[in-house]
Length: 365
Image (tube, rainbow, N blue to C red; front, top):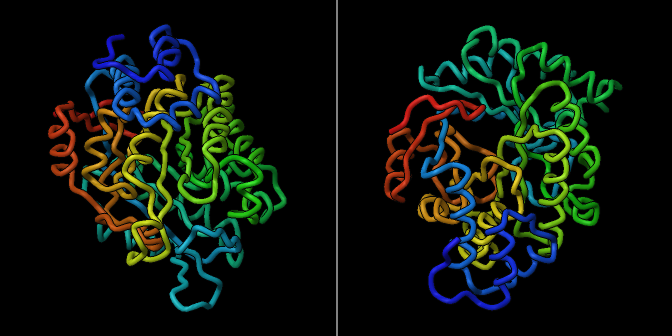
């Protein structure tokens, strides 16, 4: 591997490891995070990504659906949730969800991405019926629905095991799980930031079960709040170990935490350096993941374009209407068109590839 210019000496052992295809350790990850040599880290991540994916960068035409914002959990980073009866609280019936989709659907949409609050005022059948009504009317669309945290909530709601819940969801029409609810997979973080949600072990176990049932899934990491750099790396290593075990993850998605208000100080947001470094380090640490996603909703379109040279091989999708990050203070658009995504990728001198949920290529632009 050729690295231009003279990299800092502290990165030399890591360059050797990456060149030899050796796995990086937590200590290696800390060295990368603490190094100011952003461009060498970018080159390393770029080389790893090119070896896996060539110059192709993927996107999907998808639609976000958030059926309810009523939630029993009180996560410190969330601006989306509401209590029952609180101003702004809503719960769409399955028929209203169908109407919502019908008003926005275009024939090129290939995926419904469905996540919402942990609404304890409705039965589990409510969540099943949303899936079955959409599957009935849009059988050609992949349904990516309910995070591992929601699955664990359904398990408590029904008294059934997570495996039983997953089997019922699969029967109703769920094809894959989104990566949400992971946040940071350490108990110190979860006790402070999301104490009412699935534990680290429960989140991982849910995806382990899903993989055993033949499902491919996704994983996120919500960075930029109270977690330490070491905790970010522990998170990566824990999902890397599960990937070693099951091979069931399609993509890793670093998510920059959003402040509660759009007017929040620049100091309440992650820095561009941190965003790009985290994408690159994710690519280097997660040697067994095919794709690292750059989430334009949280970091913006221009950093997303740059990230394609920092190890990202996917820039997500069209969304149609994103609510959760925007309710927390995201400054970006709530949707992009296919043409805009193609333009972003071509502008980075990469090859745009429209995909389905499982990275089957639909069209190369």
